[in-house]
Length: 120
Image (tube, rainbow, N blue to C red; front, side, top):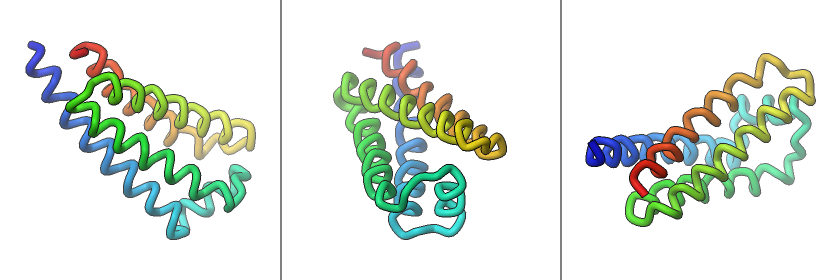
């Protein structure tokens, strides 16, 4: 059973990391859809680099967690908090249409957290 949980962690860590890198890259290059969403929520452009770097750090932490589980757990906690913060930002901006995406990403980020804890 533990091997299955570990393999699940690895697969999800890789998939979530790819998603984070793709999203962070979009922030850095000013992808039209990402910029529109960020402007709608009221995120200043000067924050895009910091937010993208946080995504990259989360991706790196999840991948490092394959070899050193505490780092993966810490990264997953940070990602869950990051995306819950995004949900709050959408709700504060009355952007109910945009809130489900970061909520789903918070849940998806919580899965490696649970799997990491199960295999720690």
